[in-house]
Length: 385
Image (cartoon, rainbow, N blue to C red):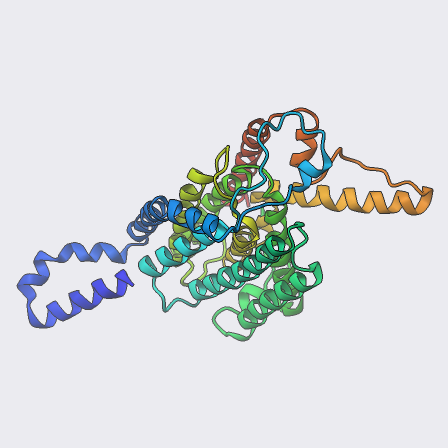
């Protein structure tokens, strides 16, 4: 919005008042992605600080709190957990999504289809998450929306994005040519069916993986901030033809605008972490986790780097795999022996370490460290090709 407004003013002054145009030449700064990205990050952070207390109070007034014990507390044995999370407002993802969307709209070029697709995925998945959070509150059991309904909705969004990219001539290559990290050439071409499948799996898998990670104060949002920084670098490089050519990575026309989105996400995430750090005053809930996971997947797809997701978001992958392994092994052993056995003390993995006696803050900080290591490996793929 600010980009178009500044350019409109400069164009009008150029035709009607050239002398005043020279005095307002600083408006040309809005043409630079770096300036608008910085503006988006600062705007999102300040807006989060301002809106945060108001939204938390609003959620408390509506009694949108977690009045049921979370899964970790129900399981018992968490001696290191000092404070119960029962009664803490959830649906805090409303703050993240509201600030993220507003800052992106304010600072980006809204005629960019990549921005519009990303915002669409965030809003739809946030709506799905909000519905799920609301269902949990109404049921007061933590059950929420049936998994089948959530998967169908996620599939619909991801399939739409994949098919749209394929049918649009300017973006069909993002789906039909498959790129992998550490290799500079497509490993497959003219494989639209495979590309669409990857899009669907990426969006559905990542949104659910971030959702599973959201179990400790500050864990999911802190890891999301680190991943967002990785994509800030990737989107800027992919959108700059000189940098993309030098690094031999796919150049995607218009991808630079996604840098503004990533910057807004970082600002919104930092603002939310202010209230979500231990002891948390608010939880993001599915409203935030599904939206964030979907956003990361869409960003990876739009810069033709879908397989960078499991590297940059390694923590999310580990958390999701721990649940899959735990569930699968339990069912298999119960079917074979009549008694279900577990691999971990509890899944997702962060609860396993809580059961081992780690304090919640220890788990969170150590997962941050691992997330930074994954981020470094992901950034290394830009040069090691």
